[in-house]
Image (cartoon, rainbow, N blue to C red; front, side, top):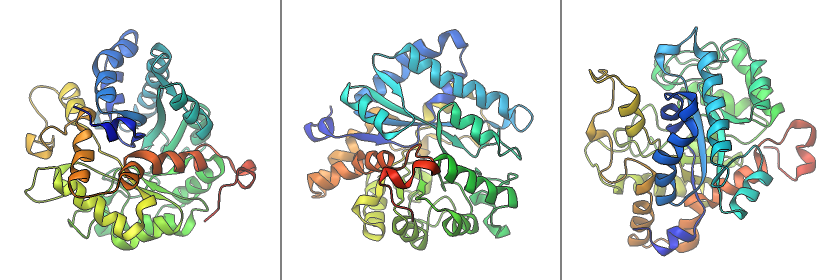
Length: 351
């Protein structure tokens, strides 16, 4: 049951792969599948602001990546149009505010690793026109733009095209997401970007040494540049054995201590149901096991558990509300979709 504080908060989730599950259905079923399967979970979790990553599975890479990217972007538009009484696809802070005022869930489109873009970085313009407002350049492996975190041994920065992509995203007002990017790539983006960046679903390497987590140096640098870090809930990235909500709170508390209370949000990375619905029954060897998820927190309906545990640890209400979503909301109000032409006039601060 959702407690009173959680129900009053703006809860923002910056990474839920639900769009993969929606797009796996026939287009005529996209809107009703979302309404039947995902809307009740988001409402039960009190989610008011949801980032929808466009993640392209291996089977579509690389020849079919752009086609699947466009299919998933279209699925987002269709599910939003078919559920206009409850959700709204938003491209800037004003649209998010309008959705929240109308008691709708604000949806924001993001690219995860952008294999559909490949070497054609001008396609970022196209995707921006279609509503994409957040993007990363790599997943675990290597792309034409950058290396993912599983390639850290290579010590690679962004490619020349990756450097151009950062500049293009800065111009378009598309927020750069460093989750999944390799260590040297994160350094490079921090050197290059003229705008604040975010990590949509990353945790603290100081607490658990996994390549998907961010070092304290990177956490501080993102915060110093007016960016934000949203904590991942995927259990194997948080602790070797503990599969309770406590490691999640540990990572939140550590990042708050390093980056500051106003620079932290939630990026749960809910994938369990999506994987179950899109993976053949024979099971892929790399599919996460049941041990990869905190019981009760496999999906958005479990988010009140996080609030309850923060309260039990003695967190102040204002700080809980900040981490649950007010920080992300303010970040998007300031940064989302603000192009170079009107960036300074918007009151935003270049870092």
